[in-house]
Image (tube, rainbow, N blue to C red; front, side, top):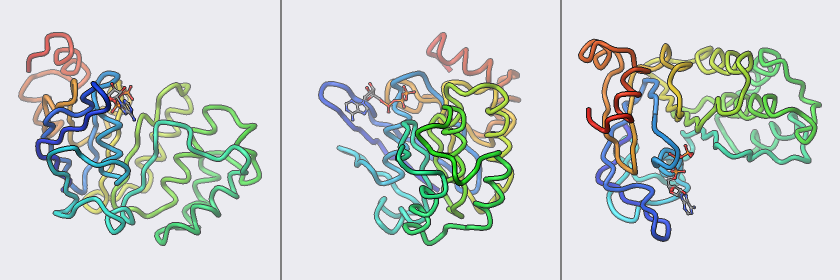
Length: 233
Ligand SMILES: Nc1ncnc2c1ncn2[C@@H]1O[C@H](COP(=O)(O)OP(=O)(O)OP(=O)(O)O)[C@@H](O)[C@H]1O
């Protein structure tokens, strides 16, 4: 599992994480929810080994995030990180040279599933296609931990559906962990096993999605509205 124990991270006067304590179980799909600025991206970057806590600890299967743990983590950032001068095929070759878990046959299957072409220039494709290209490069690795930061943000409904199908297509429950950060839960409610609600740098509610639904007798969408409307849980 991935654990955050009283993790604080400050940027200037802003506490992006404020004594955050939470557990992401391994082998499950976790919905990582919260409004803008709640600290979701900062947390995912920590798991990916791209930033460090000021205080507190993050552990991945008991280990500090490091070059070693990075090998098992595929991270899809919220920002557009693809090099615009490359084609999709060139970006894939670039990734392939970096990651030992690159699965080229999976890449070829996903290119066609997502209706992309390796010859497409990243500069020229639409925002939705770029979102799909990011997903393609993330899921062409056989990584044990997959971090998806706002994979559906600003994407039209048909493309959202393709993205969701891609997420679940090759998911290996029990072996692979997927963490999906989002402001909205509606589209992913059906996928997620576990949920963590973030607010102002803290995990304010977490648990098994099914247990939370039955305990509170409401959908996660309704629960999310309650959490952020009243600030009580
Ligand atoms: N590198 C940085 N420099 C300065 N402030 C930062 C930096 N990274 C994050 N922050 C601030 O920390 C807070 C938490 O940001 P973070 O991106 O983790 O939130 P988030 O939940 O992912 O929000 P969003 O849904 O808008 O992406 C925000 O107030 C943000 O402005």
